Image (cartoon, rainbow, N blue to C red; front, side, top):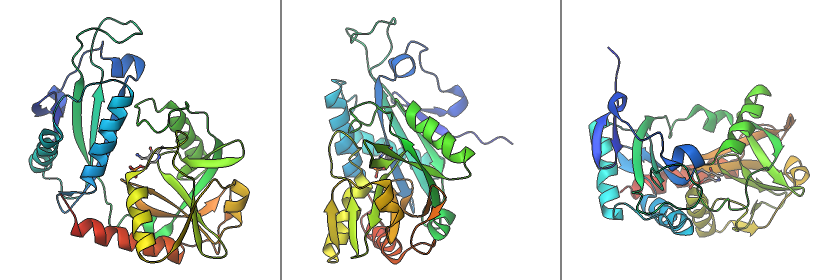
Length: 286
Ligand code: PMP
């Protein structure tokens, strides 16, 4: 029997094959919308408040109204976890400006569209956490407001496809010679002196919720952090490299452009930060 997931569309919980939105939805025609991905472990939400704070910020930057209060959104997340019996995976939430005849300026009176769905995914025991991932470097051709979590994701789609064709799992994006971030995660290196380096927050990168949590944990443990740009060359000569995101937590990066990082296996800093992050997430589920 085909399994159909229950998904959320504008306040309704419906089987995925009965879920519909308008072909005039501006999320579809203009990528005029934003999204969040929240991970679920043991049926609980990880970093939920952070994801909702960023959602509100993304919507505000685009003058899209939040269709439901954060409390209602939280209930909807829990409801979907229950209806889909999700133990471990992610919840995708998207809000677009809504449907209207195709015209560029904001339409009058359009109601934002909100959809949510779940995807099962192994997070705590993800194989890539043990093996590490291989990445290629790709020029960052995205727009100038990467701090907004827009659904306009064609550049990362092309970057991930290029990575796949090169036999790798992801791409690190660079601009003016410096790494901005991974195609769907924040990027880090560990220097010879055990300093964790990651690009500082600006409009050039997404302000990762996992980044925030991981850097807090690293600071708590007395690790040294430098928030500054670094080059692919510096990364190639680093002791370690890794990425963070809601759907990966922390993944070690063992190879960039076919060159091994450190000894080519997951390093102790990435491994430790992953453990700390999971321990902290489990103790603070919403
Ligand atoms: N950068 C980009 C471009 C991303 O798509 C993501 C994943 N949403 C991240 C960073 C990591 O953000 P988070 O830790 O909030 O998932």
